[in-house]
Image 1 (cartoon, rainbow, N blue to C red):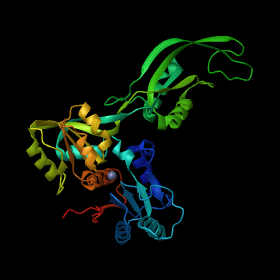
Image 2 (cartoon, protein in one colour):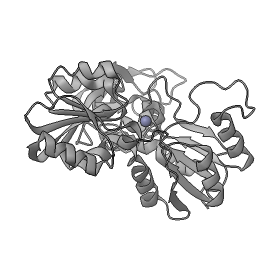
Image 3 (tube, rainbow, N blue to C red):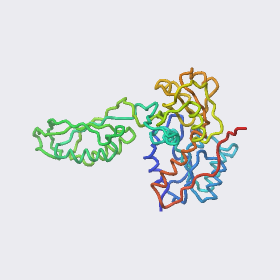
Image 4 (cartoon, protein in one colour):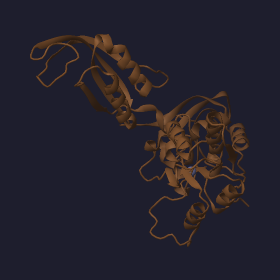
Length: 365
Ligand SMILES: [Zn+2]
């Protein structure tokens, strides 16, 4: 049997909740994670119809992109749809888990699905996140360097962009004098010992610091390990908001709009004036992405595609690019495929179902 928590652990590795924005409420919202997974239903929103569908399809775990609860609930009386969803889920032993801005932030997340649907290559994060990394420096006797370095890499240290196992290793001499209560790995009590050591430097994601350090201490031979954890400001190229990519074959703006409408299955695109330019560089952000418009202009994108663009925000494009609003739901609809595909690849003991409810609250007449 597979417990709900085992599924959530995998999803946490896929899109760590720690990468969600401050206003967000991604993660487990309702449910007992020790229960066995009977089936999983994937949706963009957890509406009442989606919970009813989960009951019908015998799924006791709903994974949604948007969290059903955003801010604190003081009463749960069923007065609005959010409260009714919570009541219905709890009554039917259904857990609800949301992967929201954390999944938006991953290079393999919501925006990668858009890139793939539009056939874009050379994709990069538009606004990489800062302050997500630490530098770990540890001093290891040279005959143990391999085991310590391997443990660091295994725990998730040393990943930079498309490179794994990145480290810097420099040789030097460490000294120590053990007192009578010590049990030194090498050297004698009361005598100054000189040891040939390697200083290993690696980058680690902040959120993995406890696991990586505790495993490093486990395999390190010293009683007292000398190590430093240093905050660094570097951007992380693989984590952040929005994305930019290139069309394999540049096309006219009209052809691109047609392509966009067709691939993103949208019935309506609201856009600024066409500029009679050839479209090659395309920036985009699933959901509400107006906040990235200036970034898209700065990297000289020909188009910026997102949802939820307000009237006055269209003016801000200033004929620097074509700003296109394809709809919030439409821009994120393939996120369901992304989450479902990941689960199917990683689990085989329960059914992964995709919602048949269209949760888009907006209709076009
Ligand atoms: Zn959204």
